[in-house]
Length: 415
Image (cartoon, rainbow, N blue to C red; front, side, top):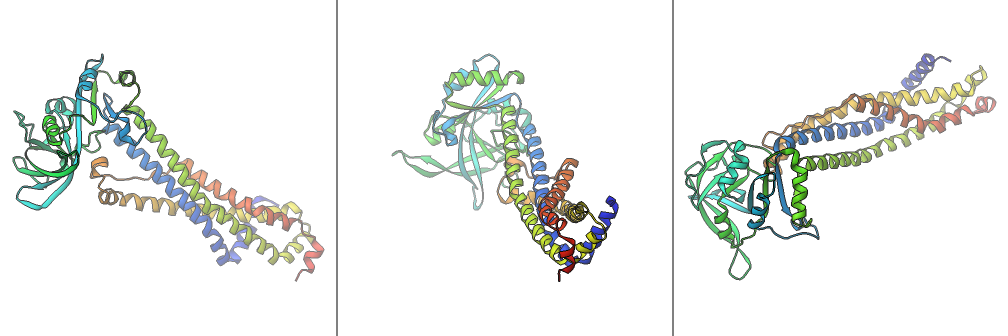
């Protein structure tokens, strides 16, 4: 029997049982929809984050962090300014910037109801200008000149909060005389407010209050630093200089090289995406079991029909192909619908991404305008369709084989 004829009969048999066919296809649709939406969102998110990382990470900037700060059981607990000076003497290093980073709540000096949660970044402004000068575009004010102890620069997310020249109060958790911690209030004069930068590597410029490093050390009564930002002369030497820094610390620090970070995150996103796809595939397996059950019931209902077909000369393989064709057609149609709904769901979730980013307070990482565009490649579409068809045929094989093996005499006698 020709393939067109087999498919025609399969479509006719499915049309006779529209409700049952729809319920059977629903499992395929849900499984493919989940798979496609996760794949499209995962690929789109990976591409968007990779693009922003490439824009945010400077290829000529390396960051040195105490390894123990990242919840590891090895490495140094702190860094020192002298170590930053030693690194600056290494060949190929242009500039270093020691940083102290602390959390704080900043208030308007005359209105405690207006406040923002931010980070205190203790840094030398001259080094900040040399390393990140191309990103420090001011919408108000500018770099303090001369730099005074209470000078401060605010990131873009504070633009509507205060203005250049205003005095703000910062509530900071500091060490007290007994070695414990307590909140203390300090005032700073805002010399400038920056434009939005978005993701900017290890230094979150948008949600930061920059103050002089000496002031930060004095406030916290703590001379150690949290990180060292290293600007190198040639980005192609990043790996070699990073290795030299690791040797300097005997591998007791974490050195972030932009290319390594991007590759690591990309690999992580791929693993997470595969894990989510594996979970979504469970829905397809459930749909396959449903097809198995429906096909077994269908064989029982159509026993006499099968007997008539075999009595008229239909071969075993013809009956087998007939049932497999129904399953394949069911998987194909369910796959097409699932792909359409899956992309629609991914697009809808992508449009909600900016609100989710805002609700989680992650604008300083992704920027205030983070739009997630799902990406659905032709290979993904073809794979989803093939997967739906194959799963349907695999689970339909046993009922189809059972139908093909029926004895025509016994089948004709079946009530």
